[in-house]
Every structure is written in structure tokens, then in C-alpha cells.
Length: 76
Image 1 (spheres, rainbow, N blue to C red):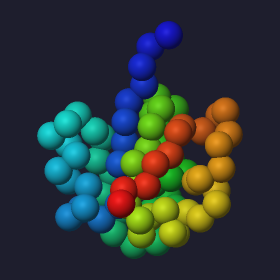
Image 2: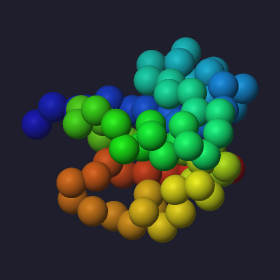
Image 3: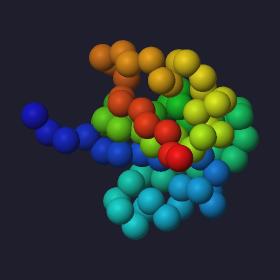
Image 4: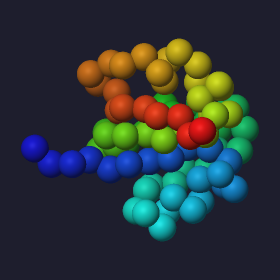
């Protein structure tokens, strides 16, 4: 089994530093951008790091474990 990638969704100032660790940074500055980015995540993403604001926008959808969706964590 191969390891997929890690992506981070949120405001630029909150997620840009994660690129230094090899995370795919997906900047989403407003609620519509967060939803659009979430819906278009590549199938190769195994872990998504959300800012607290992005998690609030996505709500339960992002936090409910589903085998077809990547594992999701929220930044403190």
C-alpha cells in the first residue's frame, strides 16, 4: 500500500508554513472557497488538515469518518 499525500485547507496565513513539511497547501480564504476546495480534493489525499475556521464551514461533513474520504484533523 502506498502513502497518499497530506493537504491543508484554510487561510494563507494559517497554512502556508505547512508547505515546508511537504503538505499540499490549498488556500481558501472564504467559506465558498473552503467548500469548493473540499469538494475537489484529489483522490490521492489521505489526510486533510483544516484550520478551525475551515472546519466550522464544513461542519459535520468533514468530521464524519467515511471510508471514501480522507482522514481529517483540525488545527488547534
